[in-house]
Length: 394
Image 1: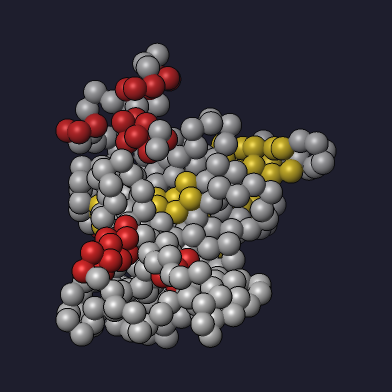
Image 2: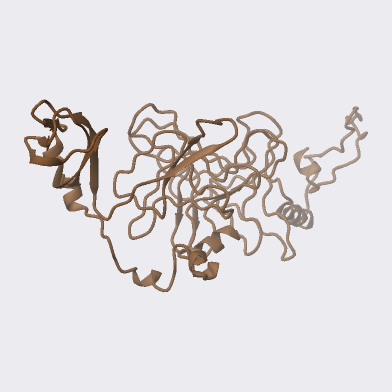
């Protein structure tokens, strides 16, 4: 039945001796007692070689299954599984090596299509389920595209890792040249989504590494009105944070439903801490200001500001910071004084990572700008412009 439906043999019409034509198929019959000529056998082999969907077991001779299509195109191997979640259209197994290799000079090397289930599924006991390697100057190791419309969920590439070990990857992409290890593209959804269900503080939803002067995780929005990065929750920077500008942005206290309120950060060339408060001097015109117990351990180079409130009075710092306190004195008793004291950080981390006030740009960034438009320069003069264009045009 299989080689008949594949068009390799025609058989004899049903209805011969002992061959009733039985509905519904009324298939032709194959008569094993009849000899097959050399020409017929050659024709069988030739037709079998040209037909997709043929299973050839060559394990006893250690030979591969090799299928070639015509130069004009076509399909080398088609594997169809009609039903069942465990049914397999094409199965490639190898004790040591590669189960299935697909090579195409132009087009698709391996295409897996399933109306309900897996198009291509890779399983491994100890190794890589599916590995994508792009070794040319540009290309993609593994590319997944979700083209369905009106779908509430789906993924271009989805790989689940249920390993209980300390390491492993759901999707691993390696690019040996100037390209992307993993590339995600979506026209109406998320390009790449990283999710972890672990409750451990050491687990990351998305983890980016770079070995050099590059960027571990880079985000850009080509629309200036959008966000290159958006964090809904607490954010910690375990290092030095630099920015072109900064502010807080909240719902406006007087009209929270319709307006926002923003304030800019206070900047300083020093790694400065600010402390302030109000205090009232006693009958002798003295007051002792108590600072946090870590103040002197954390800070150095103290600077003071004093302002009397409610009356004209002279006020001075009678004793500078000592044992995390300082003393102020007024020429009148019972004067309310607003005070401020600043210090420069001297903790071990700050001592090892002073923020450079002025620095030369690296050689590859000279002649370029962080914000070219602010200097009347074209967008092409922006740092990272070429890489952004390449990724945006993919």
